[in-house]
Amino acid sequence: MFEVLRSLRSARSIACRLWTACLAKAQVPLRDGHLALLDGWRGLCILLVMIGHCIPSLGFLGLIGVEFFFVLSGRLMADLLIFRRQPLGLFVRRRFARVVPALAVYALVAGALVNLSSISTGSDLRLVSPVAALLFVHNYLPIEHVVGVLEHSWSLAVEEHSYLVLIAIAAISGRKPVLAVSAAFLVSILLLINGIHLEIPKDGGQQITWRSDYRIVSVVLSFAVFGAMRLTTRNVGAVRIPWYSPLATMLAMLAILFLNPAYPAQLIIGTCFAVLAVNTVESAGTRWREYLQHPFMLWAGTVSFSLYLWQQLFVSLAGVFGLPMVMAIAGSVITALWSYRYIENPAREFLNSRTSAKCHHVHATSPAVEDSGVIPRSLSGVR
Image 1 (cartoon, helix red, strand yellow):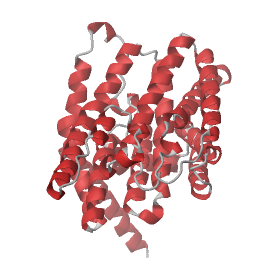
Image 2 (tube, rainbow, N blue to C red):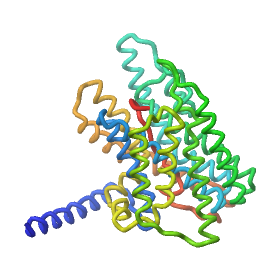
Image 3 (spheres, helix red, strand yellow):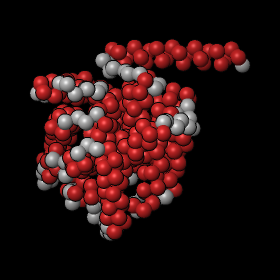
Image 4 (tube, rainbow, N blue to C red):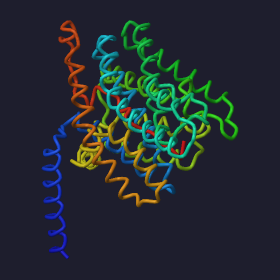
């Protein structure tokens, strides 16, 4: 028995070294410490999304992954806008560099494939959906115009719209943490009230969970809680509860599983647990942090945006042609690595290098931390 256990440990060690070597070969950088925890959380998000897409019976995991992406985004934006006080112009340019190049390539490829298929079958062209994805209005697109391979761009639109609200909060509050946190809590309450009063759509109607005038509550609430916790830590010191983050993560998943996420008053319960989970991850116990900092989780988090984009296409193709999902996963991973290495990362570095010299004094956080994790984050069949 002990020999078997020793053999398993040895095999695991060899597998980890091989995996790390493969990542180095693919030029996917891995970080450690505080950055790794957030990369690992992002990795958890994209894995949940992919499982939810690939296994219909576990589709609820996709919605959980999207929610975890949103709350991570709120936390990161609070740090950048309120505590690091990143100039708003620089903030907008970095958001553009983070999202638009890779999204543009995906939208062009996916839109071309869809319209070539339409031409071959004599159907009408489907141009509205690709344009709406690029303009970040896909979440308000009439459902009859939505193309499946671009459906997941609704969550990108929600995140980009949330940034506009957070910029407004930062500007109006003068970057004063107490005012910004208070304003964010107030906006969260108003968004939730609006969501509760929205009618559940009839068959063929746009889903409430796609609408930015309600759905950005997840981002804004996490923004507010992160700010409040930072202020509390300043005044009374940090309170570390090792089991809190993993427990809150599990409760968030259970809430979304057993409640009806189509109703805002029920989804907000899972959102609150998710907000607490991501904002207490640094104080988590060793096991939880080791899990999030595993090389595989770091890899998934680092390439999560490209992986998020391309998995939708390959999962859709697998469904259309009846291919095994393992082929969809392989295609997603290979294309995501290509996208990250040759499009996403080079474009981001080039565009960020073009920022004006007056912004160079601002502390430049790593792409994996300063950028939200839009990354991510969506569901095609479950939303």
